[in-house]
Image (cartoon, rainbow, N blue to C red; front, side, top):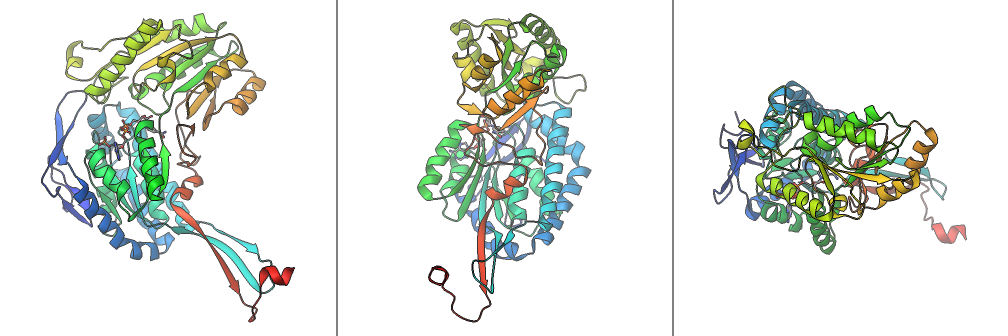
Length: 498
Ligand code: NDP
């Protein structure tokens, strides 16, 4: 087998599985148990440069392969993902903690995205247009850009890479992938599937290692024409400065502080069920997690009671166990961050209704578990209502009217996902129009995107690019306009027309 060995894993560069040049390694650890799952290369700039060179070398042949042929390989990737779904989901649960139904969903999203975008291999439509001149044809086509650098977070370790790698490849680019340091094993398995599906050497390469070393080298290297990044706003804005200086194309998906509005006419039971999963699914570590619940004062007593009762009953544990509803957070430092914000919330005068501490009973003491936490009496301007905590913490913010609720919702530097619970169609339509986020749900939590619709956010969540939908192709291709003059004489557009 050409793939990585069990226990000790390698980078995939130019069709070969290789260690870091200096032999440095780092561990992948199960956040539910502390068990070391594998050892992977701790790659530095030299390894990233090797991968970039391999991608640059593979580019001319890959871009010339007709897009429908490129897509055939991607369809084979999708089929292999289907066949290995359960194994991949189990590995993902072990590596980053979310429960099996969620990791199955993560792999399924990669499957959906791969089938959807592979289908574009037979489309990649441009368009024809009438020319201003007689005997002249005019049309435009999508062209690839070259080597794409893909930098991803750990919370969707297969879905997010698939949103970037598959469209980049179908457009004819080659890729160097730098996954999050918490989830290298899932990323390596994902890349191995492309190898098994027959992707030519060098077309997709992976280097595992710290963002500040391997990731930064991708951003700085002149041969990398595009950086596609998903992660924190802090890192994303640093990358934006660098890419602007280097004149490099950059697609950014960053933080969120997503909110749901619950109106008095809502089905409050439905809202509570949906919001429990929006707030505490993936232990609150989704970019679309609901961390602000803006509730009309008339609905507040009932909603609060239901949420607290449900949150208290959530079963924490190892995500591989069927009874577990909420897994650990990803790391010790993430646990500290959550705890810090809980202290900030207390100091700001918010009232803790449930949770607010690390969960340590029995086997939980071995992992990074945090009790699902709900704050009441939160004001929109408080730090816990403004800053992304990225953990199992949500806030109740009371509003006196629909307009006030929408104002509170929009009072955020972020703009990814939002929802409204109401039975009033007029209120729903006004919310859709006035909420300033990239995604809006009605009578549904803030989570659950579908791959064939554009995904992304406004304000400091993104920089205008979208992943998912056909819009994702714009991040990985550029337009070439073509004019063919078959008049047999010199036609001078401006002069002849004047
Ligand atoms: P980070 O920004 O810490 O890391 C994201 C990726 O960037 C990782 O691969 C990381 O490597 C790498 N990186 C870090 N520093 C640099 C650097 N200087 N140069 C190049 N690469 C670098 O985010 P997290 O992994 O902690 O992910 C959580 C964040 O992601 C949250 O803010 C969340 O909202 C956001 N997110 C946004 C989504 C969206 O679609 N809007 C979707 C999912 C998550 P390493 O792991 O080695 O540090």
